[in-house]
Amino acid sequence: MAGVEHDCRATAAGLYRLRSALPSALLAATAALAVAGIVTSLARSYAPGQHGNQYGGFWASAFAGVIAVQAAAVARAPRLVTARRARLVAWLAYAAWMATLGVVALVGMAIATPVQAGWMALWFAPLAILASQALAHEEARRAAAQAAPLVLVSAGSGGDGGAHPQTAAKGGRSCCGRPRSAAACCARFAGCVGWSSIFFLAVFGFLLALQAAWSAADQVAVLSKPPGLLLRVPIDGSNVLPRIHIMCVGPASPNASTFVFEAGAGSPGLAYAPLADALAAGGRRACIYDRLGYGWSDTAVNPTTLRRTPLALAALLDAAGEAGPVVLAGHSAGGDGALQFAALFPGRVSGLALMDAYTGAAITLATGFDYSGPAVLATLDAYRAAVPFALPRFGTGTAADKSRTDPKNGAALAALYGSNKEWHAQWVDLKAMQQRPNLGDDLIALSGRPAFWPSASEGAPGGVPTAGWPWFGALPVLLMPATRTLEPPPGQPPLPCVAAALGADALCQAQVRSGPGNFYAKLYLAYAATLSSNTTLAPVEGGHGFPWERPAETAAALLAKFAGV
Image (cartoon, rainbow, N blue to C red; front, side, top):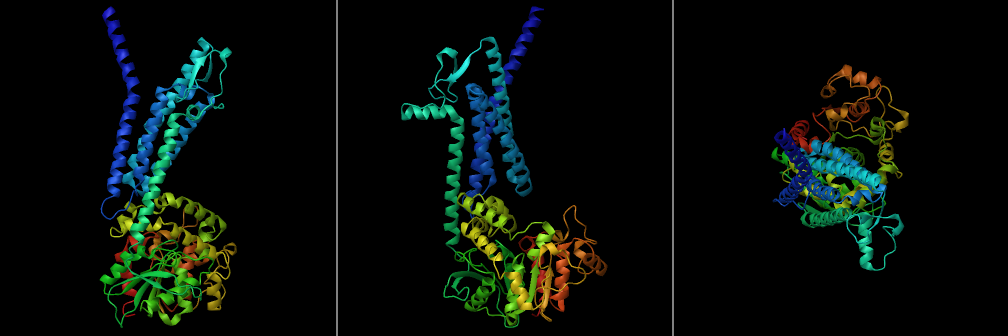
């Protein structure tokens, strides 16, 4: 029996040692993997054609290492969490907050950049260890307090918590009491907030500074090498002559119009380079340009109105020797700009294409959010404040994201979207939308007809509505809404037919016009009925980014519609 009892005790002791060693082993493994993640991200970032760190895995790995260090500090130093009840609450709240943030980030990365999502999973083991060790220390403190009631006061000698048991009679200074020297001040401050917290803040600050330096290097590396021409053109009918960037590819022909792309809100012209290259491969000339403030063009000047865009484009095409007439293709918010240009300069447009382009009223009706309201400007202000640390680039797409759809220009696009100049230009554009006359007023004045959905509060009109844009006669017009955009979100009336069939299904069109909701489909049916007698409605399979996600298919549709134009 004695031998069996000895074996049981030995086994129990072994299991206890294993359980005690497991947290340390997990933390050591997490730290090693975090270093591997940092090195891997940096190695990928500095691959040819990439600029600086543009991978979420870098930040996920770095914070995994920081959390592992914090968990180790908590595990080894009971005084970190037992000096005050507030410390325990703070550590548990911190663990819960970071775990929640980790889950949200993990889900987001798994959707956007699944290759990087694995590094985010490194957070959870050290966070669990941190919380469990903090609770274990608190239980031990309570047990000790019941056995021999003591008062925890500051040791006054630094350390990670700076507390040790003394009798109540000795009293002692508060942890953050007034020190007598600079060294004592630093030690007492460390005792108050904990060395591991200082380490966390130091690493976070260092990484932000490093990211800011990388972001600045991106701007120098990319913006110093424009791929096209920088031409000085007048804006707003003034003597101000900023430089605007334009790049044209493909053969010029007197018998075929050049395609010109009006980019969506916040997008540089380079985003449409794959589509321009596909058109050039089909034997047509295509030009992309950067509106003032975007891409390689000079910084946007405020204040302005949205009429600046078509006036500047007309002057730019003259300066570049591309006077036209041109086939003008507008994507997203660029659709309204294309309509405005065609209304102002009908003789310079031989064809018009609207690629998933929508009016502000249609967007507000469909989403319930006013994208021209003050809330958007406040959001842009926050982004502009974060731009020096390159944080917005993780929301607009890293080099890895951009390279998947455009391997040639992915790194440059990530740098352009991460530029403060780009976000300032968006702010100027949206500010102009809130001023009068805005683009909608301009189109109404040019057309002489009432607006289509003058305001979102009026709801969708019945039948075929009149429209706040001109009638272009027999001008070839190609309407290319994205099928995913036409399909209403859950909770709204469904589209009566498959989105791809909207252009050919007369019954579906009638049901859309007379039924509730489906504001995007209603808008495109209004375009088809009121823009031109030579209009083709051809929904494109995919989402809003099909011009760069599916450039070959998009170019084929454009070439088919505008053959001989």
